[in-house]
Amino acid sequence: MSKFWSDVVHKLTPYVPGEQPKLTNLVKLNTNENPYGPSPKVIEALKAEAADTLRLYPDPNSDVLKAAIASNFNLQPNQVFVGNGSDEVLAHVFQALLKHDKPLLFPDISYSFYPVYCGLYAIDYQTIPLASDFSIHLDDYKRPNGGIIFPNPNAPTGIPLALNEIECLLQENTESVVVVDEAYVDFGTESAVGLINQYPNLLVTHTLSKARSLAGLRVGYALGSVDLIEALIRVKDSFNSYPIDRFASAGAVAAMQDVAHFEQTCQKVIATREALVRDLTALGFEVLPSGANFIFAKHKTHDGAELTAKLREHNIIVRHFKSPARISNYLRITIGTDQQSKQLIDALTVVL
Ligand SMILES: *Cc1c(COP(=O)(O)O)cnc(C)c1O
Image (tube, rainbow, N blue to C red):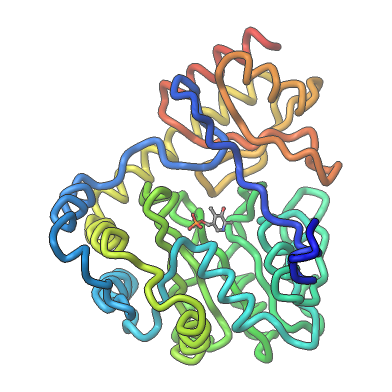
């Protein structure tokens, strides 16, 4: 607290990301990173970029990257917005499209950055409780609102929503923007991107941090109608002209182009997830259905905080949320390699 701080800073409650430990011998299953590296073509592109051109500013419009993303989804480049991680994209989305007189709606258990952005931009919001099985009931969102946002699959539950339900919401909610945060969509959830040309109120956000294994490069993007993208560009150009540096652009373009690497690694993660769900169930865990690269699980008799601490003694870190109480017994476990799953199961067998 300081007399030098502005009023808004005094009132902020910042987001707390999962731990990035300095130790290297840990089985790190806490922040949903991809256990497989990015495409080797990304590394080549980064090396090629480490050249004299670094003295020059990058392209402020990221045209090459937007074209690479657009062609991936059969959209036009002016339907693409890029930013420094999808967290930055989301921040601009909140300011540009979700701040209105009526409240923004999102699930009570969801990505915990959403209320943080509301605090930063003074956006009025209402949380909508998840159903008793932790699913999102989109019928509950059919009420006056200044915007709707939810992740699909939801985080930290991993539960996917069906596309026809999202389409129904879009049809009934034509006066405000519906944002589908598809950070984990590539691990077995249906994407809403195919609906973009039909619904001018739909915005979909993606990240290269998870399925494309580039959390360290910081690139994310939004896809939507030209009108929505224009709003984001206006905010970005009033904030930072060059959010995508030359390395980020080169690496992201190569990642978007190597579809084979992307598909193979996603399939491996999905196969490891399915095997891990079976093994955890056999150990007495209840695992929520997951369309993501993580699972949300609780043990029938053991406490979530205690299990998290015990796993840490075995050099395994998973994510645990103390609140709200409804999820305090759950562990959010990132899907790693088969070897890491084995280490987890071996440790849990000892602990239990
Ligand atoms: C990881 C994540 C993001 C943001 O990812 P970036 O690394 O900032 O691109 C956005 N939404 C959800 C739900 C996430 O889990």
